[in-house]
Image (cartoon, rainbow, N blue to C red; front, side, top):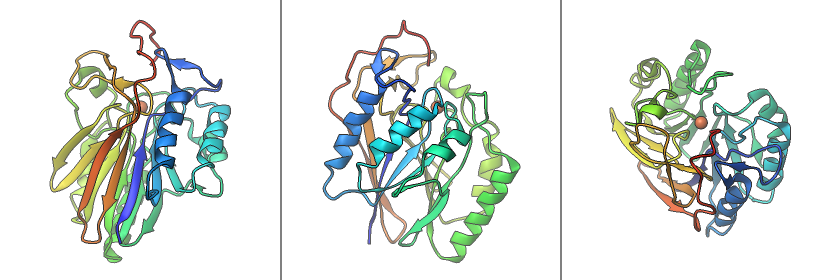
Length: 264
Ligand SMILES: [Fe+2]
């Protein structure tokens, strides 16, 4: 059976509803994406949120996200981004179909969600403890003859955008050192860069998801925005380890983002 996954990322919700990031009402933009997910037929088997769910890390922003997600009859998993507060997420982001688990499986696929958040920093880093846990999870999924989808917030390489590259995953070779020991990892999904991206490395596909709010301009040396709609990523995981994926843009860009409004 195919496992149908939808990934969304970088919601940047605020404590106050309808607060704006660079001129964009992030909650209204997210709700537009959520509506598109609710209209998918069939509904996905699971929803994956890859970080920066809140802009200010407030309990109120996570509580409202939880309430919004509870309107979707879809099992939902999440991980933290650089703008998030993990402790607060762990307190707020639990509900009937909303799970804090970082390792789970569906059919013959294992899902491993990594925490690359370093409090107070925009860039990401994986601790020794996280890498050790990753290795154990990979050994376990290998023994179960599963394929693996790995998720984290930060891109583990340059995306040819100097300003974004400064906040990529630091020392990614430590991650690759673990991944290269295994041959059953099929794809790695991430967020943070607010744009669609596909790379291939050592037989593994790396996919970025656009944001549910503002979109960054690809390959821009400095901070730059694009006026294109928010998006979700659909991924269909097959029993033989292959997959199909597409980015679906949702509606129109709600507002023209305003570069003059600093604050990302
Ligand atoms: Fe981020």
